[in-house]
Figure 1 (cartoon, rainbow, N blue to C red):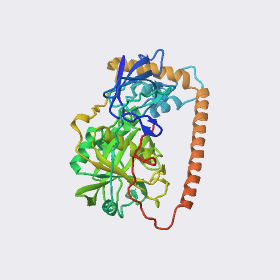
Figure 2: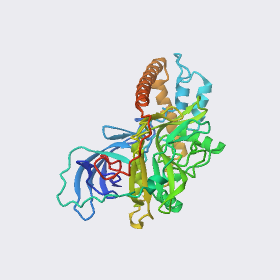
Figure 3: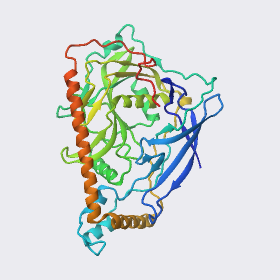
Length: 460
């Protein structure tokens, strides 16, 4: 079957974007492997190929693109093939299949485990179901011969601060947010200039939603999403403060995974620029979730690269034509390596991205589905039967002392590897702290984000 998409970020030639965003891309499905009842396969698989880019006022350009990453879904990608999850590879699945390892002639030596397996209601959907809203990173398998008459790619205008008023308005802006306990948390890495109505509308039509407040109901719902490996598109965020104030907006963009989301905390500043309100923001991408005993609740693992998240936010707003101009302040005194309140490492070039908003172009809006698929195939009876088949199949292979030893070894090596990476990160952090400038440094004028040393350019 055919697959249709739009280009969110252009590939580059000599560090210059070669296509406009929001142009159609065509592809097709190469192969599909369903789980069905689980008699033959535990996991699903899907292979796509993207074959043509359709620039405006130009003939189609043939490409050979394979999926490298489904950025906001549950699935992983290997060798261009999207691979589905294994439903029994969950916390509750590990408990039921690893609780007893003693050899036994019976499949279920414990009637309690048997009842648990038959009645436990949370069982993730194993099939792949990618609806509108999936962000895919596509790798070109071979170079493209670009036509000479390809239309020039429009560039976002650069904010000019000749009189220094914008820089003055941002003087004294804190560099970090903090928790209620006073721990340094996220980095203030973006500022928006525009009315609250323009700000809310821009994020709404680009697929971002307001998060819910923390309550017993939302915590239980988040716990269910964690066990079911499903989406919770308005999941609550942990409390953070900027100069003692709570955020005015807490926005997030999620798709089919509770573990992966982009989120923003936004505070209105007391100062303005050209009569426009200014909004400080901390943009972070979360890549995984875990239930932490130490932190007494859920914590999310975050992407180390904060500059990449800046570009993701700018990309989403640009595609729906809500950006008037953009620029960046360098902050030389800001450390390039730091930790957040839960010990996760952040890496940044220190820039503060400033985005001036405008009323979004009616003809340039991107249709992003706020509907999150239920990911439930077949009837309840079908899903119940499949759950039992997949559970028995997994236990026949994994619920024994031999596999338990293998699994324990694998997980131990993973912990050792993570500890090694953490020690290396600590070393880099100590070195960066040692090299931090101690004298006060002047902040330069806004840089041209379209220049060769820009932070607003695209990456392949």
